Length: 298
Image 1 (cartoon, rainbow, N blue to C red):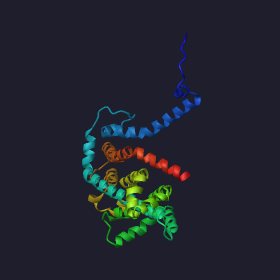
Image 2 (image 1 turned 90 degrees about the horizontal axis):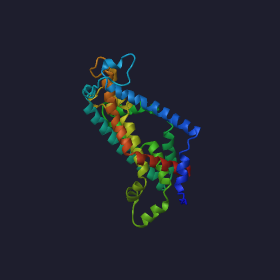
Image 3 (image 1 turned 90 degrees about the vertical axis):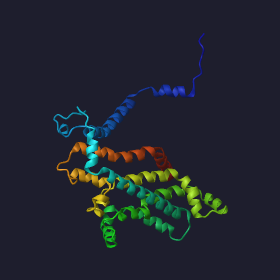
C-alpha cells in the first residue's frame, strides 16, 4: 500500500518554478545577452592589460593573450607616479565624503525637525539649486576662488563639500520626514538637546541612507576630472588619479605614444577602490535606496 506523503507548502511552488515557458526562456536569454554585452568591455580591458603592445594591434584581434605580460602593471604604475596620485585621490575622497555627508545630514535635520520661520523657503532653495547645471556655476566659482587666492590649491576641491550637497539634503530630508516627531519629543523630555538627538538617535536610524550617500560621494570625488583640471592645471604633484590617468592617455607623462596595455593595467588599478567601496557597502546601499523609495511613495 502506497503511503501518501503530505505536500509541503514550498514543494508545489518549487515544482512550478521548474516549468520553463517560452517567455521564461526568452527573458533568460535576453538577460544573458545584456550581461555579456556589459561585461565584454571589462573582459577586453583585462586581456589588453595583459598583452604586449604589438599584440593589441594584431589583425585579426585575439580575445585571449598568447603571453601574459604582468609587468604592464608595474610599468604603468611607474609612468604616472601612481602611488602619489593615489594618495592624493584618497585624501580628497575621504574629505569630500566626510564633509558632504555630515553637512547634508545636519542641514536636512534642521530643515525637517526644527520649526523656524522660512524653513520651507530654504528647502525649496536647496532643491531649486539642483536644477542648475554644474557648468553654469563653473565660471563664477573660478573667479571667486581665484580672487581669494585658492587657485592651484586643494581648497576649491574640499571646502564646497562642507557646505552641503543639495541631492544629499533632499535624500536625508525625505528620510527624516518619515520618522515620527514623537521620538524627538520623548528625547527632549529626557533632557536631550538637538545635538544629542541628531547624533544618538537620528544618525543610527538613518544609517542606510547616509551609507548610500557615502558611496555616491566617494565615487563622485574619485572620478572627478573637471574640477581638478580647472584648479590644478600647473601642479602635477597635487593632481588626483583621474587627471593623472588622462595625462597618461594624452602622453603628458613623458610617454611619446600611449602604451595602451599599460594604460589599461593602470585603469584596472584605478577602478579597484570604487568597486571595493560599492561591494563592501552594497547591502546597506540597496537597503537605503529601497527604504527611501518606499518612503517617497507614501
